[in-house]
Length: 322
Ligand SMILES: [Zn+2]
Image (cartoon, rainbow, N blue to C red; front, side, top):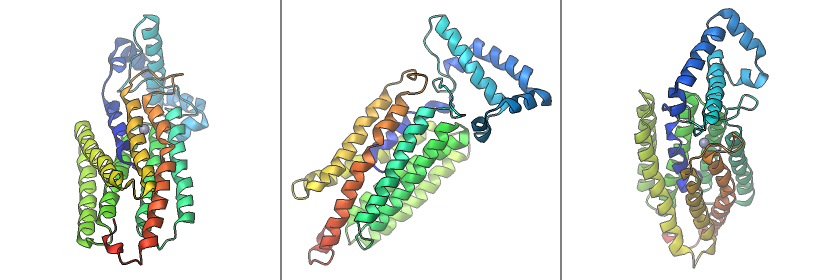
Protein backbone atom coordinates (compact mmCIF):
# COMPACT_ATOMS: atom_id res chain seq x y z
CA UNK A 1 0.00 0.00 0.00
CA UNK A 2 0.99 3.52 -0.38
CA UNK A 3 2.16 3.39 3.13
CA UNK A 4 3.50 0.64 5.13
CA UNK A 5 1.13 -0.87 7.57
CA UNK A 6 -2.19 -0.47 5.97
CA UNK A 7 -2.44 -4.10 5.13
CA UNK A 8 -3.06 -4.88 8.75
CA UNK A 9 -6.59 -3.79 8.12
CA UNK A 10 -6.94 -6.35 5.42
CA UNK A 11 -5.83 -8.90 7.95
CA UNK A 12 -8.64 -8.18 10.21
CA UNK A 13 -11.34 -8.73 7.67
CA UNK A 14 -10.03 -12.19 7.24
CA UNK A 15 -13.03 -14.02 8.53
CA UNK A 16 -15.33 -13.12 5.70
CA UNK A 17 -15.75 -16.55 4.20
CA UNK A 18 -16.17 -18.25 7.54
CA UNK A 19 -19.40 -19.38 9.13
CA UNK A 20 -20.93 -17.25 11.90
CA UNK A 21 -23.67 -17.35 14.50
CA UNK A 22 -26.24 -15.82 12.16
CA UNK A 23 -25.92 -18.21 9.25
CA UNK A 24 -25.70 -21.16 11.66
CA UNK A 25 -29.01 -20.30 13.35
CA UNK A 26 -32.21 -22.25 12.75
CA UNK A 27 -33.99 -18.98 12.02
CA UNK A 28 -31.67 -18.22 9.12
CA UNK A 29 -31.55 -21.70 7.66
CA UNK A 30 -35.32 -22.21 7.89
CA UNK A 31 -35.93 -18.84 6.22
CA UNK A 32 -33.35 -19.47 3.51
CA UNK A 33 -34.69 -22.87 2.48
CA UNK A 34 -38.31 -21.66 2.33
CA UNK A 35 -37.30 -18.52 0.40
CA UNK A 36 -35.18 -20.47 -2.05
CA UNK A 37 -37.88 -23.12 -2.61
CA UNK A 38 -40.67 -20.55 -3.07
CA UNK A 39 -38.80 -18.10 -5.28
CA UNK A 40 -35.73 -19.59 -6.90
CA UNK A 41 -36.56 -23.21 -7.66
CA UNK A 42 -38.62 -22.57 -10.80
CA UNK A 43 -37.92 -20.58 -13.95
CA UNK A 44 -41.08 -18.58 -13.34
CA UNK A 45 -39.95 -17.68 -9.84
CA UNK A 46 -36.50 -16.59 -11.04
CA UNK A 47 -38.06 -14.57 -13.90
CA UNK A 48 -40.37 -12.83 -11.41
CA UNK A 49 -37.38 -12.03 -9.20
CA UNK A 50 -35.32 -10.70 -12.11
CA UNK A 51 -38.11 -8.41 -13.29
CA UNK A 52 -38.29 -6.88 -9.80
CA UNK A 53 -34.54 -6.11 -9.63
CA UNK A 54 -33.21 -2.57 -9.64
CA UNK A 55 -30.58 -1.58 -12.21
CA UNK A 56 -27.85 -1.50 -9.54
CA UNK A 57 -28.73 -5.01 -8.42
CA UNK A 58 -28.62 -6.23 -12.02
CA UNK A 59 -25.24 -4.62 -12.70
CA UNK A 60 -23.81 -6.08 -9.51
CA UNK A 61 -25.10 -9.53 -10.48
CA UNK A 62 -27.43 -10.24 -7.58
CA UNK A 63 -29.02 -13.63 -8.07
CA UNK A 64 -32.30 -14.99 -6.73
CA UNK A 65 -30.29 -17.07 -4.26
CA UNK A 66 -28.30 -14.03 -3.08
CA UNK A 67 -31.54 -12.15 -2.62
CA UNK A 68 -32.84 -14.91 -0.32
CA UNK A 69 -29.62 -14.77 1.71
CA UNK A 70 -29.94 -11.00 2.04
CA UNK A 71 -33.63 -11.14 2.96
CA UNK A 72 -33.07 -13.93 5.52
CA UNK A 73 -30.06 -12.15 7.01
CA UNK A 74 -32.28 -9.22 7.90
CA UNK A 75 -35.17 -11.39 9.07
CA UNK A 76 -32.81 -13.31 11.36
CA UNK A 77 -31.20 -10.10 12.62
CA UNK A 78 -34.66 -8.74 13.51
CA UNK A 79 -35.52 -11.98 15.36
CA UNK A 80 -32.26 -11.80 17.34
CA UNK A 81 -32.92 -8.15 18.26
CA UNK A 82 -36.53 -8.90 19.25
CA UNK A 83 -35.28 -11.66 21.54
CA UNK A 84 -32.83 -9.24 23.15
CA UNK A 85 -29.81 -11.08 21.72
CA UNK A 86 -26.69 -9.48 20.25
CA UNK A 87 -26.68 -8.65 16.54
CA UNK A 88 -25.23 -11.75 14.86
CA UNK A 89 -22.70 -11.93 12.03
CA UNK A 90 -23.36 -13.84 8.83
CA UNK A 91 -20.56 -15.64 7.01
CA UNK A 92 -18.00 -13.64 9.00
CA UNK A 93 -19.61 -10.25 8.34
CA UNK A 94 -22.02 -7.91 10.08
CA UNK A 95 -25.37 -7.27 8.42
CA UNK A 96 -25.09 -4.22 6.16
CA UNK A 97 -27.97 -2.35 4.55
CA UNK A 98 -27.62 -2.59 0.79
CA UNK A 99 -27.76 0.59 -1.28
CA UNK A 100 -28.09 0.70 -5.09
CA UNK A 101 -27.11 -2.96 -5.07
CA UNK A 102 -23.89 -2.25 -3.11
CA UNK A 103 -23.37 -4.51 -0.13
CA UNK A 104 -21.30 -2.13 1.99
CA UNK A 105 -22.01 1.36 0.68
CA UNK A 106 -19.96 3.17 3.35
CA UNK A 107 -16.86 1.05 2.72
CA UNK A 108 -17.38 1.63 -1.02
CA UNK A 109 -17.56 5.39 -0.52
CA UNK A 110 -14.49 5.48 1.74
CA UNK A 111 -12.54 3.27 -0.68
CA UNK A 112 -13.43 5.79 -3.40
CA UNK A 113 -11.99 8.54 -1.15
CA UNK A 114 -8.69 6.60 -1.00
CA UNK A 115 -8.79 6.04 -4.74
CA UNK A 116 -9.37 9.73 -5.43
CA UNK A 117 -6.64 10.71 -2.95
CA UNK A 118 -4.15 8.71 -5.01
CA UNK A 119 -5.38 10.05 -8.34
CA UNK A 120 -5.21 13.68 -7.14
CA UNK A 121 -1.80 13.23 -5.53
CA UNK A 122 -0.41 11.41 -8.54
CA UNK A 123 -1.41 14.40 -10.66
CA UNK A 124 0.32 16.78 -8.27
CA UNK A 125 3.37 14.55 -8.13
CA UNK A 126 3.67 14.58 -11.90
CA UNK A 127 3.25 18.36 -12.01
CA UNK A 128 5.80 19.01 -9.25
CA UNK A 129 8.50 16.43 -9.90
CA UNK A 130 10.41 16.38 -13.22
CA UNK A 131 10.53 12.96 -14.83
CA UNK A 132 14.32 13.10 -14.70
CA UNK A 133 14.25 12.91 -10.88
CA UNK A 134 15.58 9.72 -9.30
CA UNK A 135 12.85 7.27 -8.25
CA UNK A 136 10.27 9.12 -10.37
CA UNK A 137 9.27 5.96 -12.23
CA UNK A 138 9.20 3.83 -9.08
CA UNK A 139 6.71 6.18 -7.42
CA UNK A 140 4.64 6.43 -10.58
CA UNK A 141 4.39 2.65 -10.66
CA UNK A 142 3.59 2.62 -6.96
CA UNK A 143 0.76 5.08 -7.53
CA UNK A 144 -0.66 2.90 -10.32
CA UNK A 145 -0.49 -0.16 -8.06
CA UNK A 146 -2.30 1.74 -5.29
CA UNK A 147 -4.97 3.03 -7.67
CA UNK A 148 -5.53 -0.49 -8.95
CA UNK A 149 -5.80 -1.82 -5.40
CA UNK A 150 -8.36 0.77 -4.38
CA UNK A 151 -10.44 0.02 -7.47
CA UNK A 152 -10.64 -3.60 -6.29
CA UNK A 153 -11.44 -2.48 -2.78
CA UNK A 154 -14.41 -0.56 -4.23
CA UNK A 155 -15.49 -3.61 -6.23
CA UNK A 156 -15.13 -5.99 -3.28
CA UNK A 157 -17.12 -3.83 -0.90
CA UNK A 158 -19.75 -3.29 -3.57
CA UNK A 159 -20.09 -7.01 -4.12
CA UNK A 160 -18.49 -9.65 -1.94
CA UNK A 161 -17.78 -12.84 -3.87
CA UNK A 162 -14.88 -15.29 -3.42
CA UNK A 163 -13.15 -13.72 -6.44
CA UNK A 164 -13.68 -10.06 -5.61
CA UNK A 165 -12.46 -10.87 -2.10
CA UNK A 166 -9.31 -12.51 -3.45
CA UNK A 167 -8.63 -9.62 -5.82
CA UNK A 168 -9.02 -7.16 -2.97
CA UNK A 169 -6.56 -9.14 -0.83
CA UNK A 170 -4.03 -9.67 -3.61
CA UNK A 171 -4.04 -6.05 -4.71
CA UNK A 172 -3.85 -4.80 -1.11
CA UNK A 173 -0.83 -7.05 -0.64
CA UNK A 174 0.70 -5.78 -3.89
CA UNK A 175 0.68 -2.27 -2.36
CA UNK A 176 2.52 -3.22 0.78
CA UNK A 177 4.95 -5.52 -1.02
CA UNK A 178 5.78 -2.84 -3.58
CA UNK A 179 6.23 -0.31 -0.80
CA UNK A 180 8.83 -2.64 0.74
CA UNK A 181 10.51 -2.97 -2.64
CA UNK A 182 10.57 0.81 -2.98
CA UNK A 183 12.18 1.02 0.46
CA UNK A 184 14.95 -1.32 -0.69
CA UNK A 185 15.43 0.80 -3.82
CA UNK A 186 15.52 3.95 -1.70
CA UNK A 187 18.06 2.43 0.69
CA UNK A 188 20.25 1.20 -2.17
CA UNK A 189 20.66 4.75 -3.49
CA UNK A 190 22.26 5.05 -6.93
CA UNK A 191 24.56 2.10 -6.24
CA UNK A 192 23.89 -1.58 -5.50
CA UNK A 193 22.23 -2.31 -8.85
CA UNK A 194 22.52 -6.01 -8.17
CA UNK A 195 20.54 -5.67 -4.92
CA UNK A 196 17.76 -3.81 -6.75
CA UNK A 197 17.52 -6.45 -9.43
CA UNK A 198 17.52 -9.20 -6.84
CA UNK A 199 14.76 -7.45 -4.86
CA UNK A 200 12.66 -7.12 -8.03
CA UNK A 201 13.08 -10.79 -8.98
CA UNK A 202 12.40 -12.05 -5.45
CA UNK A 203 9.39 -9.70 -5.13
CA UNK A 204 7.78 -10.84 -8.40
CA UNK A 205 8.51 -14.51 -7.64
CA UNK A 206 7.07 -14.29 -4.14
CA UNK A 207 3.98 -12.40 -5.28
CA UNK A 208 3.37 -15.05 -7.98
CA UNK A 209 3.77 -17.82 -5.40
CA UNK A 210 1.44 -15.98 -3.03
CA UNK A 211 -1.34 -15.79 -5.64
CA UNK A 212 -0.79 -19.37 -6.76
CA UNK A 213 -0.92 -20.68 -3.19
CA UNK A 214 -4.06 -18.74 -2.29
CA UNK A 215 -5.96 -19.68 -5.44
CA UNK A 216 -5.11 -23.36 -5.70
CA UNK A 217 -7.62 -24.48 -3.10
CA UNK A 218 -9.34 -23.15 -0.01
CA UNK A 219 -8.20 -19.64 0.82
CA UNK A 220 -5.65 -19.92 3.62
CA UNK A 221 -6.59 -16.96 5.81
CA UNK A 222 -3.98 -17.77 8.45
CA UNK A 223 -1.11 -17.79 5.95
CA UNK A 224 -2.38 -14.63 4.28
CA UNK A 225 -2.49 -12.85 7.65
CA UNK A 226 0.98 -14.01 8.61
CA UNK A 227 2.53 -12.84 5.35
CA UNK A 228 0.75 -9.48 5.46
CA UNK A 229 1.80 -8.86 9.06
CA UNK A 230 5.39 -9.80 8.31
CA UNK A 231 5.74 -7.64 5.20
CA UNK A 232 3.72 -4.82 6.78
CA UNK A 233 5.88 -4.70 9.93
CA UNK A 234 9.11 -4.90 7.95
CA UNK A 235 7.90 -2.14 5.66
CA UNK A 236 6.57 0.21 8.36
CA UNK A 237 9.51 -0.10 10.69
CA UNK A 238 11.92 -0.06 7.76
CA UNK A 239 10.66 3.32 6.60
CA UNK A 240 10.72 4.64 10.17
CA UNK A 241 14.27 3.36 10.71
CA UNK A 242 15.33 5.17 7.54
CA UNK A 243 13.43 8.40 8.21
CA UNK A 244 13.94 9.08 11.94
CA UNK A 245 17.76 9.50 11.86
CA UNK A 246 17.40 11.90 8.90
CA UNK A 247 14.78 14.10 10.53
CA UNK A 248 17.27 16.73 11.70
CA UNK A 249 19.10 17.18 8.41
CA UNK A 250 16.09 16.68 6.11
CA UNK A 251 12.96 17.96 7.89
CA UNK A 252 10.72 16.82 5.00
CA UNK A 253 11.09 13.17 6.11
CA UNK A 254 8.58 14.05 8.82
CA UNK A 255 5.88 13.49 6.18
CA UNK A 256 7.10 9.92 5.84
CA UNK A 257 7.00 9.47 9.63
CA UNK A 258 3.53 11.05 9.89
CA UNK A 259 2.24 8.69 7.22
CA UNK A 260 3.61 5.56 8.86
CA UNK A 261 2.43 6.60 12.32
CA UNK A 262 -0.96 7.62 10.88
CA UNK A 263 -1.29 4.26 9.18
CA UNK A 264 -0.40 2.48 12.42
CA UNK A 265 -2.85 4.57 14.45
CA UNK A 266 -5.65 3.97 11.95
CA UNK A 267 -5.13 0.26 12.48
CA UNK A 268 -6.48 0.65 15.99
CA UNK A 269 -9.88 1.22 14.42
CA UNK A 270 -9.76 -2.24 12.97
CA UNK A 271 -9.43 -3.73 16.43
CA UNK A 272 -12.93 -2.56 17.30
CA UNK A 273 -15.48 -5.06 16.12
CA UNK A 274 -18.99 -3.71 16.49
CA UNK A 275 -22.27 -3.93 14.58
CA UNK A 276 -22.31 -1.26 11.84
CA UNK A 277 -23.56 2.19 12.81
CA UNK A 278 -26.70 2.93 10.77
CA UNK A 279 -26.17 -0.60 9.39
CA UNK A 280 -23.44 0.92 7.20
CA UNK A 281 -20.29 2.01 9.05
CA UNK A 282 -18.33 -0.73 10.77
CA UNK A 283 -14.75 -0.65 12.04
CA UNK A 284 -13.38 -1.70 8.67
CA UNK A 285 -15.22 1.10 6.86
CA UNK A 286 -13.93 3.58 9.48
CA UNK A 287 -10.42 2.34 8.85
CA UNK A 288 -10.85 3.04 5.12
CA UNK A 289 -12.08 6.53 6.02
CA UNK A 290 -9.12 7.12 8.33
CA UNK A 291 -6.55 6.14 5.69
CA UNK A 292 -7.99 8.39 2.96
CA UNK A 293 -6.00 11.52 4.03
CA UNK A 294 -2.70 9.62 4.28
CA UNK A 295 -1.73 9.89 0.59
CA UNK A 296 -1.71 13.68 1.04
CA UNK A 297 1.12 13.24 3.56
CA UNK A 298 2.89 10.45 1.76
CA UNK A 299 3.10 12.12 -1.66
CA UNK A 300 4.32 15.29 0.03
CA UNK A 301 7.22 13.22 1.30
CA UNK A 302 7.75 11.63 -2.12
CA UNK A 303 7.78 15.00 -3.90
CA UNK A 304 10.28 16.50 -1.46
CA UNK A 305 12.48 13.40 -1.52
CA UNK A 306 12.55 13.22 -5.33
CA UNK A 307 13.39 16.92 -5.57
CA UNK A 308 16.08 16.48 -2.91
CA UNK A 309 17.67 13.64 -4.89
CA UNK A 310 17.34 15.56 -8.15
CA UNK A 311 19.09 18.56 -6.69
CA UNK A 312 22.05 16.41 -5.70
CA UNK A 313 22.04 14.21 -8.76
CA UNK A 314 24.96 15.88 -10.44
CA UNK A 315 26.91 16.58 -7.25
CA UNK A 316 30.02 14.64 -6.23
CA UNK A 317 28.37 13.23 -3.12
CA UNK A 318 25.40 11.76 -4.98
CA UNK A 319 26.70 8.22 -5.11
CA UNK A 320 26.89 8.17 -1.33
CA UNK A 321 23.51 9.79 -0.93
CA UNK A 322 20.70 7.81 0.52
ZN1 LIG B 1 -11.77 -3.09 2.75
